[in-house]
Structures are given as C-alpha cells and as structure tokens.
Image (cartoon, rainbow, N blue to C red; front, side, top):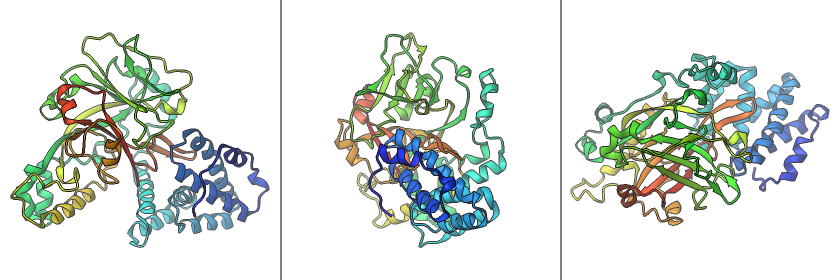
Length: 439
C-alpha cells in the first residue's frame, strides 16, 4: 500500500477524528493508513511524525475496545505487508494476547517469504518483550525521573548479559566452530579495533561537567553559539571526553584530551545530503565549559535522554567496510570473500541476544545499506577507501503505547559520522560527513 507523502493538513484531519463514533471497518482503514504514514515518514518530518502518533494509538486502542471482533481484526493485520502496520498491530495484540503474539512473531521471523523489513520490526518487538520480562521496571520509565534527579543514577538500561563482547579471539573461535578454517589466518589482518559504547540512562544532574554522554545537553564554552542549520537548532547526539578514551588512541588517532561534541539537525533528519545539518565541534583541553540551556525553539522531544558511557575495545572486520576489502592484500585467496561474508552472518547471529545498541567509535561500521559513497560525494570527507568511522549511533529508543521514544533514525537504523583519514590525523573536524541508513 503506497500512500503519497502526508501533509500537515491531513495530520490535522486525523487528529480531529472521533473514533468512538466509527464502525469497526472504518477504524481499521484509518489504523492502516496512519500506521503506514508513520512508518514511511520516519523522523524525516519530526513534527508530523510526533503528531501522528496520537491518531495511530487512538485507532488501535479503539479496535481493542470493540472486543473480540476488534482483536481479531488486529490479529489479521499481523499479515499485512507494511512494516509499520505490523509494528503497531503486534504491539496492540501483545497487550491483549501476549502468549499468542509471541508465537506469531516467532513464525513471522522464521517465514522466509516475509519481507526483511517486516522481520526486522518483529525482531525489535520480541527483543523488547524479552528485555521487559527480565527487567519489568525499565530505567527509561519516567517514574524514575524524580529519584535520578535527586542524584541517584539509574540502573544500566541493558544488563551485562545482554551485551555480546567480541574480541578477535572470539571471532576466530566462531570461525573454527563453524568450519571456516580457511578464513582464520586472515582474520588478524582484517581485524579493525573499535570502541564499543555501553550506555545507561542517568539524570543530567548526575553527569559531571564535560563527562562523556549520549544525548542530553552539551557542556560548551560560554561564548560558543548553539549550532544551527538554517533556523533549526541542532540536537546533541554525543559528547565525548577524549581523555576517557585516550587508552585507545593507538587506533582511534584522536587527540588525547579535549572534547568532541556531535550535533545533528534531527528536525530535518538528513540522510547525509544536506551539508551543514550536522556538526562536530572540537573543544581544546583547558577551555572553560559550562552546561548550556537549550534554545527555546528546540523541541523537547529532540533533546534526548542523557546516557552515561563506558568504553570497551571490540573487534570489527574490514570485510564489512568496503565492497572489496581484499584489494590491498595481493595474496588473498580467490573465493574466500564468500566464506568471510558467511562468517559475517555467523557473527551477526551471535549478537542476536545482544539487545545493547551498536554504538561505536572507530573500526568498521555496521552497514545497513552498503558503503558511504552517496554521502561522501556531498562533502569533502574523502572517499570510501580513505574515510574512517568517527562515531556510529544506533537507534536507541523505548517502544511505548504512544510510539517510539528516544533516538530513532529513519525506520530504526544508524547514523554515522565519518572523517577523512588525513583530517583525522591532523585533528581537523571541519569536513566530517554523515550518513543515515535504515532498512
């Protein structure tokens, strides 16, 4: 079902609907339309996206209130072709029939005829169900806000057992266990160390000035203007105290001190073809910084909840970085690329239980849609061969009855900040490129 791009006038019309006076079939029709629109616009039109969440929620809630006929209607929508419809129907059905919903979700994931986009949203849903089963009081629950504000840090948003750490030894072990012996001698050569960012939600008051974080509000020099693109104030995506990651400098090649601040115009939510709508700011060590008050025209939902960070080294493989990662290895055996690709799938399966989002610095990017040729063409950051990953930020959000709350890129993908190798070695962050990729 393809719909034209929704307009503000059409969203307003949905907001004015009286679902209580509608027959079941009409509510079903509106539920499909609104959830399809919600999925297709993603966060490219943030204001419309957030306004549309209300009508979507109201439509599915009304279907539930019809009783068994409405619940049966929601169940039928689990077979819909649009991922947005499946996402909303699955969430609603799980509240009514959790056991049956989980069984249906499992069947959808295993069905090879199901589109990859639908399977992806179902996997996301099941991951959250498993997580909430272990942690019924989630630290993203607003009820924890008053406690955190009193100076008590929230518990880690994901327990340690949900984080799958893979060093090069673990990668070699997976290769050996799965019969990829021909790849093993090459894995150390193709290994590319990275920093995995492990986060937990905290109150801003808990974070020390300059402390590394995802989201929240920045600590900047008092005379530094809040970054904007055209008229839009940008959101803080990350603040990194470089002294906290100085131990990894041998492969990050970043300065040993100072701060890097990553900003992004999340109202526009560019895919990487609007230079100027993101910015990386380097603040030299010793500079006076203070916690800033966000501009009044920065929407509250675009100030992401602050997350304190821990940093751990993790292995990635160059096989995931370029279309032909073996071109610089003259003696690379022909045909081994296929085995390495299969090994990549095995490693991905090893992370199936890894609910912790894939936030990382340096190393090989976790691609969703291939290389970065398109976004690099719009900047001076270089080409694929000479470009390095500076920061990768995964979608990091909580599914609620009102939609997705938190960082949500496109339909649930990643954003990547990229830097040319020469600029990285010079410590120049003026030509950083950005890419947004999602399913």
